[in-house]
Image (cartoon, rainbow, N blue to C red; front, side, top):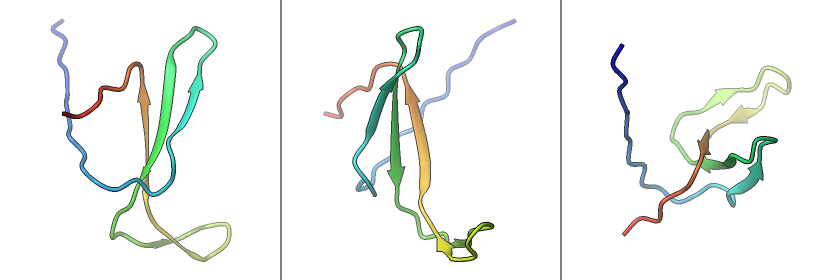
Length: 64
């Protein structure tokens, strides 16, 4: 079975500061929020919500 790698470049201003945490096995996890133009109603509150959550595991590389 062959392995494949998917890469994506996301360019946006962060909605909130990145949240850094570490898993029990030592893997670093970064959670970031990127603003989008999509809006939807939240199921629990019925209020408008937006933004996409993105989780990055491993090492983050700084853009040049």
